[in-house]
Amino acid sequence: MLAPNNVESIIGTIIASVISFLISIIIMPFFIRYLIKNKYVVKDRHKSNNPDVPRPGGPILLLSFVIGELIIFSLTGFHEIIGIIITTIIAFLIGIIDDFKTMPGWFKPATLIIAAIPLILFHVHENHLNIIFGDVLIPILYIPLILIVIPLAGNTINSIDVFNGVASGILIISMLPLMVSTLLFAKFEVFLIEIPFLASLLAFYRFHKYPSKIFPGDSGTLLMGAIYGSFAIASQSEVIAIITLLPAIMNSFLFLSSVRRIVEHRQLKARPVTLKDDYTLEASNDTTAPITLVRLILLDGSLSENQIIHKIFRLGIFSSCLSFFTIFLQYLVLHIK
Amino acid sequence: MKFLDLRFFILFMWGIVMLACISIIFIISPMSKHLIHEKNSIIILQTSLIQAILALIIVGILIFILIKFQKIYLYKKLKAKKKN
Image 1 (tube, rainbow over the protein chains, first blue to last red):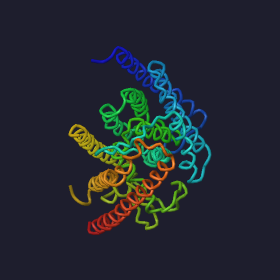
Image 2: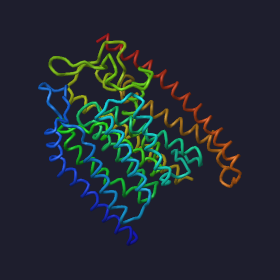
Image 3: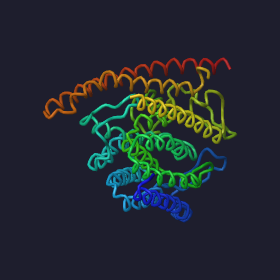
């Protein structure tokens, strides 16, 4: 039986999530028109007519998330929400700088460390790190861990944003195991604050999916990554969050281990994939080109953009299944103890 | 599931993550037990430092294994591509 204040919180969360969803759905078309009118567009080079796609969609994503979270804060007084909102806003600001000004490769990972600080100040974290087979008390070590998690999460989502709808789509898939893990092993309030984000993502995906009507830009991908990382910390589900995001982590790992330095994609001379005349993509034969997830996918043969997107989503679903299995393992361990 | 399937790569990475969790439980977690009632901040700091070094070593070894696996995987994948 739920306590009366819990029932009130659940109703409030449903209302907050609907509002978050509607903000994106209603305001986004106007924002798209504004971006097109002011020529904030980039060419989508994977399509035959190279259409102009407006960018960034981050501001509306931020607005819908923040309003949803503030409604829940007003109902629950869960102060960790404020820490997560400030982290999100800082990540968004870092992204928006990168959207309008070309910054060096170190800029995003280095500055995202600042975005992680509010999580520490508002004590969003616990002192125990949950590692499936038990937990480990690391009161001091947890702080540098937070400073690593947020830049990693932000850059991982940023680097997977290579095709229409991939970043938002893979995050929607990743949120499901994270939310189940939160519901089973963390505070109920953390589960509640995750729902408006899922609602915002679902609404945003409607515009971001293939063929994209808007791109999130760095402001959108960094804020998505920062929110995901914050939820992983707040829900003590760091390991589950890592497993669910394995395709994106694999992409970053392959890229970094082949390039051996932190560098922006646009600074690379050799491209990992090449566009054919029929607008399908094939893996580059250039040995100096970085290895990426898409390049590995294309080693089996050339594919269209839409086919690649579906392959990435299938990998996301596979790692989500691994996450659910890991959650089951953790549940078993907890009950055997 | 074949070796060259990308899902196998993800499964291997999952195994690495699980291995990291088990290593932390058996190596780092026992060191934390005496931290629960510890008031001396120097001892807490020393223990945390040792834990951090051990965690870095564990992560370093596991990343090394992953890099080795990646090289074998890529070699086999490129060989299969040439055959086709």
